[in-house]
Amino acid sequence: MDFQIAEFLQDQPMTVPWARPLVALGDLTYRFCFETTKLNEHDQLVLVLGVPTRSYAAVLIAVGWMMKAFRPPRGEEEPDLDTISSGSYVRLVARKYIITGKLEHPKSHRVRVNDSEYRSATIVAVTCIEDNAPEAKSEIPPIPTFGPFDESLEDSKKMWAKYLSRPPEGLTIVGSKTGLKEELNSRISRVDSGDGSPCRISDILLTDTDYPEPICATHVLSPQDLQQLDDPHQSRTAILDGTSAIDVIDAFTCPTIIAIVDRSLINENAAEDLLGRRDNGATRVNIEHEIEWTVPPGISAFAYRTQR
Image (cartoon, rainbow, N blue to C red; front, side):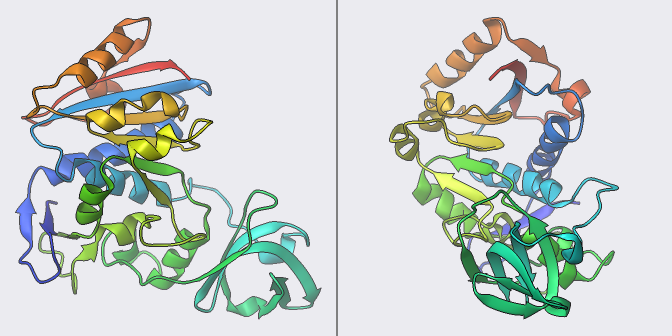
């Protein structure tokens, strides 16, 4: 199914056939790296795209990645609130709030987190997280009208609560914050889906430009932000949008890097540098056969596996 994009809420959505393969790439890259055994523990997949224009490429790949990351592995049992011991750090959704902190069981059928008590029956979803996570409390954002949350397989409110209760998945987009912010505020919908209204891309990705902890799942950084860090940025996947972003590739030791090169620009240093990295002892990855993504017309792509 094709997608429609509207830059502003009042705009008429336009069908963009090139959006579907980019969303699919995010989905397939997540599966390749985190749901198969094709990537070893210390491997890093670097996937390079040459595109006619970078407009929307990074955020559409991120949409596909996040929708895939939302779904827990098949057969994984959901945490049972009664079996989570006191003192454990959790992220739970209760009533209209998302709360992160230390869980206590003061009495039967009640729990306490961050000095506030909740009836167990009001808790829709809970996930154990790393110890000593910062205490936080935020209101639940509205359910997006796009993505797995509009499916009829399960109650949408419960699905949304499960999504919000999971720790952030570690997706980072690096590029021009101004340009990315405009694209993230654009609306997306499926063609002929019957959605009541298009959904803001930022609402699917839950970016830190719009949502505080513990809600945000996607960090949006500029190359300058990364240059100021003493240690590599912790992430599971980094999408590097443009030459300036690719220049800080060494700031990431994450399993997956997707680099987007704008072929309309004369400066080809970024692509040449990535080709040099591939040819300097890296293992080539066949995108079509291993990642199972068909490169669409107008886009060039190559991928390789290296040590991180």
